[in-house]
Amino acid sequence: EQLGACASQSVRATCSLDRIIKQERDAHRDALERAALRGAHDSAMVRWNPGLLSSSPEQIAHAWQQAFDMLVAHLPEDRQRALRSAMQDPRTRAA
Image (tube, rainbow, N blue to C red; front, side, top):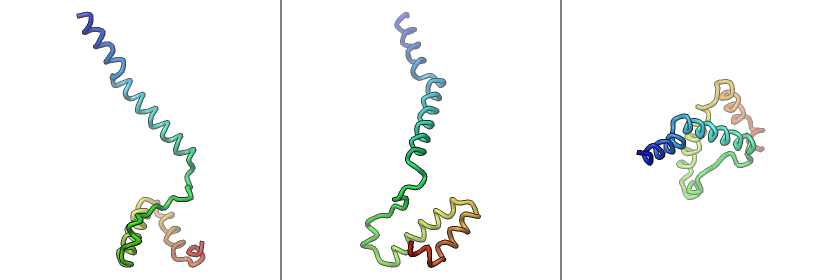
């Protein structure tokens, strides 16, 4: 009986909802702090699949358009317009 009570107390101390929620909150806080340290503008922000190099121009264009559309869909409308405008401006293409 005493062994069972000790085991129960140990489980509650390590696996209780209060304990788990605190651990999860701490993990989220740590992740946000690490992300902030990394910076919002990484020089390699755009990632692409090297397999595209062996794809047809049509497949490459399709993949690029899909990725662009997914990015735009996550932006507020004013930033969507600004990004689309920047993509049309020939000066931004030389950058």
